[in-house]
Image (cartoon, rainbow over all chains, first blue to last red; front, side):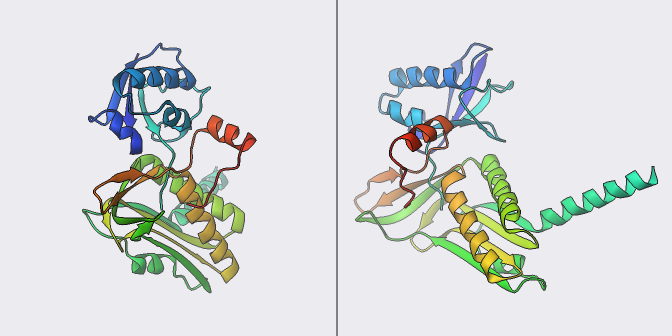
Length: 86
Length: 182
């Protein structure tokens, strides 16, 4: 399935469009998607550190999705680097 | 049948009442500014003798560098949901009646602009202080909001922040405790 990952904060520097699209297996978990994203960034955005992806969370519009969770059926996700509001 | 119907009405009333006791907002700085008077008006209530408000503003120095402004980036739907969850948590912990106001700015802010307002109204001061503190700390550490500081030399930097990744947080807790000074 095609997965669209919306970028925020420091991860916006990874793609000027504000999102990254990846092809992922239907049975993919969030933990596996994290690896796919890390590999993608290593090739296409080497300025983004692997550590930043490791510290980032994935989320739908409703909740944080931890590593064991399956991808949302609509293939829409956000990747959230460490937060710093206020 | 009549009895079930009245229970349903009662439940709906309670839900409606709860919604009117919590105000959450993300305000794009292009559309308007955060206004403490709005927060004060919202949490004011004849039942309440205590009101506490936290106002977070953009300051001109951070970590020894002169700041000219801050850009705030938000994942808005999840930020609003997080604010609602924080409101529910405050109510569970400190009880009701309580009114809570949580609003955060989005976009390019200048020095002195208001970035965040949290206000709590309760019967007595103790719950108001505690609910306000709980809410602002949770907004800073849990809401999907990112701060990019701009400096006089033209450089910019995203603040380090708190990880929302459960696996990373657990690893962090096994090692060195995270500094929540920010």
